[in-house]
Structures are given as structure tokens and as C-alpha cells.
Image (cartoon, rainbow, N blue to C red; front, side):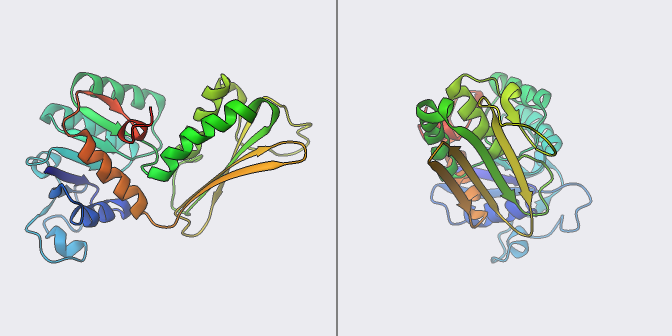
Amino acid sequence: MVNIAVAGAMGRMGQRIAALCLQTEGAKLVGAFERKGHKDVGKDLGVLIGSAPLGITLRDNMQEAAQEAHVVVDFTHASSSLQHMRIAAGLGKAMVIGTTGFKEEELQELRSLAAQKVPCVQAFNMSLGVNLLLKVLADVARVLGRDYDIEILEAHHRFKKDAPSGTALRMAEAISEALDWPLQEVAQYARKGMIGERPRRQIGIQCIRAGDIVGEHTVIFGGLGERIEITHKASSRDTFARGALKAALWVKDKPPGLYDMQDVLGLK
């Protein structure tokens, strides 16, 4: 049995992770916490997420909430997730982080803490389908990429703060690595005005923010006379929550290190 504590438990993702943890074989929900001053701190988590009372109090202190946990699952925001990782390293707790929007220096600290202290699964998208798609995209790029134009289009809800999405960036990285193209040299994030003919050695990444779109990603390989489109659409946040819980069950007994969903799914 893997004991799980949920960070940001009253957020959109936190609530679904907590609720689905109750239905996941091999997982036991033992703690939950929120930021200091949150209006629901001190209340029973079960009542807050719409189930029967669980006897689990929503805390505003990670050390208290994670005391019995083997793994902490975190979908908060970059600065909070990094601080939670620092605390987890001190407590000896594994982590699963689905937060996006990390700066490179923050990712470097995550890698350092994981390598030295505790195992951590960090992925910009916990969907099993998306992570399988990353492998497929790399294979397609190796066959077609140098002769086809590559564009990535992503769409998310109006509340998403970072752009492009972490998933879109990971897709671009998978493709650029397969083609041996440095992403910082070939990524094109927006177009406007008289831009001239499209360069062959380019990966376009475009963003849409509207309504309540959970998450949609399309990669286009456009050739002369044909076009291949590979699309993933998430219709519910539950797909990310289930992936995170799968990662939590997997990471418990792993040695210190920074892992991703490709590791969890055995795709490497």
C-alpha cells in the first residue's frame, strides 16, 4: 500500500487526485494541505471533496500533512512545488510533480534535490496517452521531419497561466531531439506581419486560450501534397490525476533521481 498526501488539495487538480486516490487500488489517502490562510484549512477533506467524512484534516503545513505519507503528489505552481520538494527531501518523502511553468534554474534545483535525496517523478503532462504520443512523435520526426514542415498547436482553458504549455514544449523537445535540431534555434512561437517564406528548419508552436478547454495538442507534419496530423484531446482532468496516481504507485521504492512518465510507462 502506498500512502499519499496531496498538495494544493483544494485546487482543480488537487481535488480530483484526492477523490480518485480513494478509488485507486494500492493507494491510501493519508494527508492533504493548502497554503496558509486558505478558507478550508481545518475542515475534513472528505466533506470538502464531496465524499463521506474521512477523518483527514486539511492542513496548512506540509510536514504535518505528509507525516504518514510515502509520496506527495503536487499540481500547484512552480515556486510552491519547488519549496515542497525541498521539504520532501528533508522528510525523505518521494514526490510526483505535475506542475508546469518551471524556469530552467528551478528545474536544475529539482534535479539536484532528486538526485541527492529522494525519488521524484516530474512531468509536464501525466496523461498516459500523451506520453505514448511523445515516443510516436519522435519516430515520425526521424522518418519525415527534415522534409516536412512541423507545427504544434495547443489549446487550454482561460485560467492557464503559462504559455506555451509544458506539454507542447515537451513535444517540441522530443521532435527536435529526434532531428538533432537545438530547440532554442528552431522554435518559432508567434508570427506576425511580412514574415517571408517559412524556413525548412523550424518548429512552430502556437497557443490558444479559451473557455474551459481541458487540453488539446495537435502536431502537424506538412508536406507538399499531404499532411499528417496527430492529435491528443483531454476531456477531463481525471486523465492527468490517474496518471499521477500511477506514478505515485511506481515511484515509492525507487532510488533517488528525477524520473518522468516515460520511465513510469517503461517507454525508455
